[in-house]
Image 1: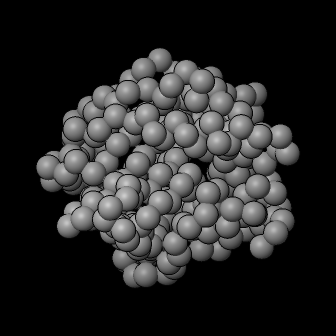
Image 2: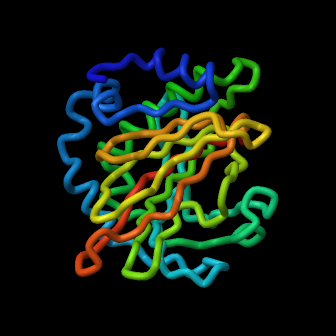
Length: 241
C-alpha cells in the first residue's frame, strides 16, 4: 500500500470496527513536512519512566502520559492529571488514579504528535454521528515502551483482551528492536477473532472502534538476549466529554 485516502480508513472502520494501516499509508495522509523531525520524536521513548502501578509485579513497562482537548480548531494541552480506568475495563490495573510523568515539553507540542492528533481527530470525528460529536474531544496520549529480557517476556496488554472504555483508539508503532511476536488481535462483541496483524515498521498503525471490538497484543520475547529488546508505541484515545 503506497498511498491512502482518509475516507478509505473511515470505510474500513465502518465495515469491521478496526483498520490496520501500514506505515506508507499513514505517511500519505499526514502533512508532508510533519514527520521531518521523526528521529527526535522517536528518540524521546528512551526517556520514559518505569510504570510502578503494575499489579502483576512486572517491571517491563515504561511510559509517559499527556491529555489534550482536540477539536477542529486545534489542539490544547490540558494540565497534568491522572490516568483512570474502571476495573470493568482494566481488571489488572484499574480502579485507581495512576499518575505518570508528562511528555517532555518539546514532545508534547512536537509536529509529529500534532499531525497525528489532527489526523485522528478528522477520522474519528467523521465516524461519530453529528448529534453525538462533542465540541472538543478529551484525548489521552500514552508513550509506552515494553521491554523483554532473557527469560522474561514483555506484555503490551497485561490486562489481556480488552476494551479501553473510550470511543476511539489509535496505536502507532514508533520502534521495534530485537523482539519476536507482539501480534495484535481484534475480536468482536462475542470475543470471536475477526482480525490479526503485527505492527512491524515505524508508523504502522491500528485504528479501533472501542465500543464495538476488543483488542489485545501477544507478549514479546527477546531474540538476542545480549542486546536491548523493546517495543515502542504511541497510543491515542478519544473520549466524548
